[in-house]
Length: 77
Image (cartoon, rainbow, N blue to C red):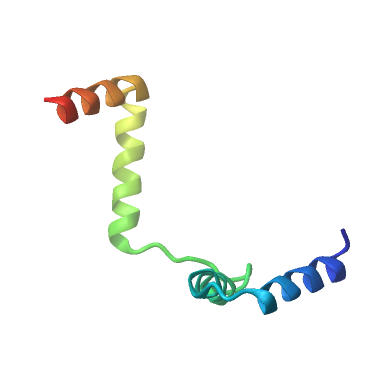
């Protein structure tokens, strides 16, 4: 499907929709900005990423299966 056809298809579906939740979601999705917007990390986010990388490189990791097992034990008492 070409871009123009896809655009028209979406427009028609939006025009026919009475679902406020869907329309609000689409509005938020389309208002989030363009692909050219660059997210800038806060100093806190940078610190967390650096800490995580150091832990990973030093072998301080837990495999996913172990985390799931721990969560199951905790949730089920």
